[in-house]
Length: 307
Ligand code: GLN
Image (cartoon, protein in one colour):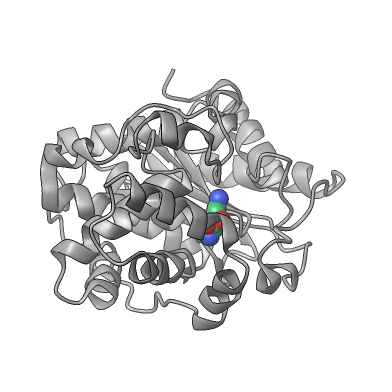
């Protein structure tokens, strides 16, 4: 698709969605996230042909929350290879992102790396395998594109920590079942830091373009992960990226993607583009209300999806 076509369709879809009612609620369980202006709305696309286009609040930083679970998974997969799947599964959970109910039956092995329990196990893997986990993960993310501006937000991490009773329960349960190696408080602190990462829509679509480019960075053509690993991360995003709304996202949008409770969504069209959307109000499943709507209307307008 031509540059002008993406630009025209994004503009048209953005205007359509802007004029609709902004339903849903912000993630009220994290006090700092409630302070964000509900009317923020931004979109940015980066294509493998180096087309870049943004609209709305696409240059404003926001809390990417669970979108960062794709970065931590990518690094853990790069380090452990296929052995990683002994620690965490690759099945959709069909439950909420912070659910405890399957874990005991599954003997402490989370269904997938994108629900909180899975991401907590991934944080544990990184703690065990990196010299300076917090700095090393940040360097890894910054090097995915040439953007050095990505940061953790200590205030958001502390805000989440102050109310994180469910995540504490999840981590302790997994520890009791033998699938956490490090001290739960260290694992959780690192997990909260990972969730606190901030980026703009523009930066996000640039950071994620490697998943549309068979695992290779665009700015220097270096291989970040193998083509097969990139395929598998896209598959996980397709089947598990939206928790118990993953089927709905596949049905309506038809692209691999990942959401966060900060209201961001990244979606990948392999071999074509990465597109990010930010609108803070969430639907009942914890996914951005307008973000989902924008992507549904956008892939309908382009008539392109992976299906
Ligand atoms: N930090 C959030 C949590 O652990 C991330 C959840 C999300 O973005 N879906 O609850």
